[in-house]
Length: 464
Picture 1 (spheres, helix red, strand yellow):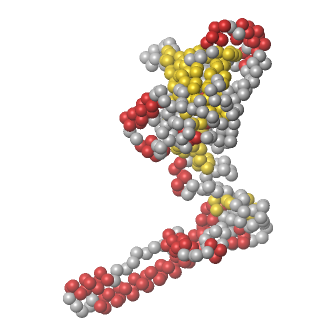
Picture 2 (picture 1 turned 180 degrees about the horizontal axis):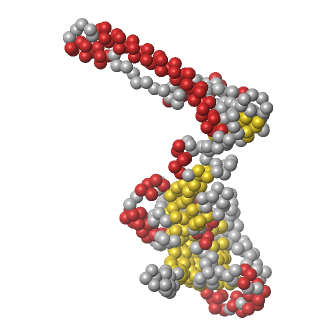
Picture 3 (picture 1 turned 180 degrees about the vertical axis):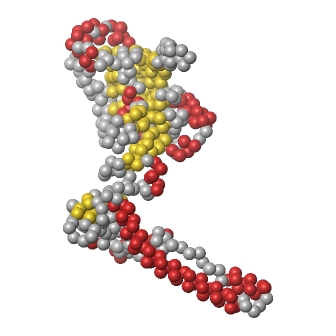
């Protein structure tokens, strides 16, 4: 059913999972808004959006920590319904930052002294020796490989990439010159033959000779794709992979520049709003923008035990058919404002669900050091055991957390039970007023009501 540990609570993403990243970014705004509206309408239906017995169920649900939240369209977003784009490039070895315009010109590689060993792929270091006019070379500290084995010696310890390009150009120049001479000899032979053949004849004969003696276009030897295509064709013609030569690539024994790494930013597929944007610095691990769903939606968990006053709940199968199973869900408010929560159950064919507390209020989040736990327990002990909360189905209150009780009755024998619940939460979001440009006064802050609706799946039983 799922690879997550059971019992657990999984959140459903309203996306279809079939939209490609490139298609989502190129769609018009009208189509994207229609997609989000249709998705929200299907999510608010009475039936769950996905069957728990379907093969697509593990792909459509996820834990709250792995989901994003778009505050523009007020919807959950998973890793399959976001648009990824590069936010910065850097070398993983020297942490040098490369701008976007230089990535293509440098062939997505570091332009400094960062090279990989051709034998063990370890990072090479520049060493100096007292012999020769070029005392510097690249050496591997793991396998003791040295660039002097292939004739690579450098005059300076800096600018190794430019010196290697000059060495490669010096190696390719004689081959290029020989190929150019052969090409011009062919041109002269074809030209002389066509002139002699068309010296005496009609205009049509001379035209026919000129058409048949077309000189082929010259192609450079260095960097030509013909050599690479011929090598690939030769390797594909082999019947046994044991006969593949280790040195089939002429530049396989040469050090290669280290490939650049990039940081990715993620946008919403519907409104193209930024969800994740990391800091551009290579050393930085912080984010400029980080809209995670755990910071906006209530965290719903299955506590093993609320306190010493309550016995631990057993949510591992097997379950008796027709016997009601009490299930306690704990809601935690991550916001600094009060949140109203509504819970509605949908009873599939294999289980019957009854929700006693369908509407309740979550207190705002409070920093742990702003109140004393002992004083909080003593002052609210009467509230915990109040008859009103017991009748409403609320079994525990503590800080920004509220625990409610469900009644789950299995109708068929099954090792696992999946309980779909539709959650609606609303809160008042404060919007700071903007400063008036015509005057120095600041307008008053306004507020707006934000309502979020989503499906969760409470999975009971034991992992198989």
